[in-house]
Image (tube, rainbow, N blue to C red):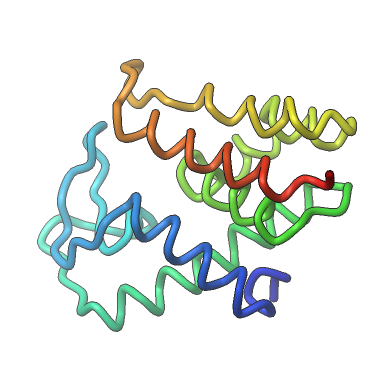
Length: 152
Protein backbone atom coordinates (compact mmCIF):
# COMPACT_ATOMS: atom_id res chain seq x y z
CA UNK A 1 0.00 0.00 0.00
CA UNK A 2 1.38 3.38 -1.01
CA UNK A 3 1.82 6.36 1.27
CA UNK A 4 -0.84 8.08 -0.84
CA UNK A 5 -3.40 5.41 0.14
CA UNK A 6 -2.45 5.71 3.82
CA UNK A 7 -3.01 9.47 3.85
CA UNK A 8 -6.64 10.50 3.58
CA UNK A 9 -5.57 14.01 2.54
CA UNK A 10 -3.28 12.78 -0.25
CA UNK A 11 -5.83 10.24 -1.49
CA UNK A 12 -8.59 12.87 -1.61
CA UNK A 13 -6.27 15.31 -3.38
CA UNK A 14 -5.26 12.66 -5.94
CA UNK A 15 -8.85 11.59 -6.61
CA UNK A 16 -9.91 15.22 -7.09
CA UNK A 17 -6.97 16.06 -9.37
CA UNK A 18 -6.97 12.94 -11.53
CA UNK A 19 -10.74 12.47 -11.51
CA UNK A 20 -11.27 16.11 -12.39
CA UNK A 21 -8.99 16.00 -15.40
CA UNK A 22 -9.93 12.52 -16.59
CA UNK A 23 -13.67 13.00 -16.16
CA UNK A 24 -16.10 10.16 -15.52
CA UNK A 25 -17.46 8.06 -18.37
CA UNK A 26 -19.31 4.90 -17.36
CA UNK A 27 -19.41 3.49 -20.90
CA UNK A 28 -16.16 2.61 -22.67
CA UNK A 29 -15.07 4.99 -25.44
CA UNK A 30 -12.00 5.64 -27.58
CA UNK A 31 -9.69 8.31 -26.14
CA UNK A 32 -7.89 10.99 -28.18
CA UNK A 33 -5.43 8.45 -29.57
CA UNK A 34 -7.91 5.61 -30.10
CA UNK A 35 -7.40 3.59 -26.90
CA UNK A 36 -10.51 2.02 -25.29
CA UNK A 37 -11.06 3.90 -22.02
CA UNK A 38 -13.62 3.87 -19.20
CA UNK A 39 -14.34 5.48 -15.85
CA UNK A 40 -11.65 8.03 -14.95
CA UNK A 41 -9.27 7.37 -17.84
CA UNK A 42 -8.80 3.65 -17.15
CA UNK A 43 -7.36 1.74 -20.11
CA UNK A 44 -6.18 -1.54 -18.58
CA UNK A 45 -8.28 -4.41 -19.92
CA UNK A 46 -10.98 -2.10 -21.31
CA UNK A 47 -13.07 -3.06 -24.34
CA UNK A 48 -15.68 -1.08 -26.23
CA UNK A 49 -19.20 -1.74 -24.98
CA UNK A 50 -17.99 -2.18 -21.40
CA UNK A 51 -20.03 -0.43 -18.69
CA UNK A 52 -19.29 0.41 -15.05
CA UNK A 53 -21.21 2.15 -12.29
CA UNK A 54 -19.93 5.30 -10.58
CA UNK A 55 -19.15 3.39 -7.35
CA UNK A 56 -17.18 0.83 -9.39
CA UNK A 57 -15.30 3.63 -11.14
CA UNK A 58 -14.56 5.40 -7.85
CA UNK A 59 -13.17 2.20 -6.31
CA UNK A 60 -11.12 1.46 -9.44
CA UNK A 61 -9.64 4.97 -9.47
CA UNK A 62 -8.51 4.71 -5.84
CA UNK A 63 -7.04 1.23 -6.45
CA UNK A 64 -5.17 2.34 -9.57
CA UNK A 65 -3.90 5.55 -7.95
CA UNK A 66 -2.47 3.40 -5.15
CA UNK A 67 -0.71 1.23 -7.76
CA UNK A 68 0.71 4.24 -9.60
CA UNK A 69 1.80 5.92 -6.36
CA UNK A 70 3.65 2.74 -5.37
CA UNK A 71 5.53 2.90 -8.70
CA UNK A 72 6.33 6.59 -8.16
CA UNK A 73 7.59 5.87 -4.63
CA UNK A 74 9.84 3.12 -6.00
CA UNK A 75 11.64 5.37 -8.47
CA UNK A 76 11.80 8.64 -6.50
CA UNK A 77 14.60 8.43 -3.98
CA UNK A 78 14.20 11.76 -2.20
CA UNK A 79 11.50 12.69 0.31
CA UNK A 80 8.30 14.07 -1.23
CA UNK A 81 5.49 16.06 0.28
CA UNK A 82 1.93 14.82 -0.28
CA UNK A 83 1.39 17.53 -2.91
CA UNK A 84 4.50 16.60 -4.86
CA UNK A 85 3.66 12.89 -4.69
CA UNK A 86 0.11 13.54 -5.89
CA UNK A 87 1.42 15.65 -8.79
CA UNK A 88 3.89 12.92 -9.79
CA UNK A 89 1.23 10.21 -9.40
CA UNK A 90 -1.17 12.15 -11.61
CA UNK A 91 1.50 12.44 -14.30
CA UNK A 92 2.36 8.74 -13.99
CA UNK A 93 -1.34 7.83 -14.21
CA UNK A 94 -1.55 9.72 -17.48
CA UNK A 95 1.74 8.73 -19.17
CA UNK A 96 2.44 5.40 -17.45
CA UNK A 97 4.76 4.61 -14.56
CA UNK A 98 7.70 3.50 -16.73
CA UNK A 99 7.56 6.73 -18.74
CA UNK A 100 7.37 8.74 -15.51
CA UNK A 101 10.27 6.89 -13.87
CA UNK A 102 12.41 7.45 -16.99
CA UNK A 103 11.35 11.10 -17.35
CA UNK A 104 13.39 14.24 -16.94
CA UNK A 105 11.04 15.20 -14.11
CA UNK A 106 11.93 12.09 -12.08
CA UNK A 107 15.65 12.35 -12.91
CA UNK A 108 15.83 16.01 -11.90
CA UNK A 109 13.95 15.38 -8.66
CA UNK A 110 16.27 12.53 -7.73
CA UNK A 111 19.26 14.78 -8.49
CA UNK A 112 17.90 17.40 -6.08
CA UNK A 113 16.84 19.92 -8.73
CA UNK A 114 13.32 20.02 -7.33
CA UNK A 115 11.94 23.17 -8.94
CA UNK A 116 13.19 22.20 -12.40
CA UNK A 117 11.68 18.76 -11.88
CA UNK A 118 8.23 20.22 -11.27
CA UNK A 119 8.57 22.52 -14.28
CA UNK A 120 9.71 19.61 -16.49
CA UNK A 121 6.29 18.00 -16.05
CA UNK A 122 4.80 20.59 -18.41
CA UNK A 123 6.59 19.01 -21.39
CA UNK A 124 4.14 16.08 -21.37
CA UNK A 125 1.40 17.96 -23.21
CA UNK A 126 1.06 15.85 -26.36
CA UNK A 127 -1.00 12.85 -27.37
CA UNK A 128 -0.57 11.26 -30.77
CA UNK A 129 2.14 13.85 -31.52
CA UNK A 130 -0.24 16.81 -31.05
CA UNK A 131 -0.34 19.35 -28.24
CA UNK A 132 -3.73 19.05 -26.53
CA UNK A 133 -5.18 21.98 -24.60
CA UNK A 134 -6.50 19.63 -21.91
CA UNK A 135 -3.01 18.23 -21.34
CA UNK A 136 -1.52 21.74 -21.23
CA UNK A 137 -4.02 22.61 -18.47
CA UNK A 138 -3.42 19.35 -16.61
CA UNK A 139 0.37 19.65 -16.72
CA UNK A 140 0.16 23.24 -15.49
CA UNK A 141 -1.99 22.17 -12.54
CA UNK A 142 0.33 19.25 -11.74
CA UNK A 143 3.42 21.43 -12.01
CA UNK A 144 1.90 24.07 -9.73
CA UNK A 145 0.87 21.45 -7.17
CA UNK A 146 4.36 19.95 -7.30
CA UNK A 147 5.92 23.38 -6.72
CA UNK A 148 3.56 24.06 -3.79
CA UNK A 149 4.83 20.85 -2.17
CA UNK A 150 8.49 21.83 -2.29
CA UNK A 151 10.26 22.95 0.88
CA UNK A 152 10.74 26.71 1.25
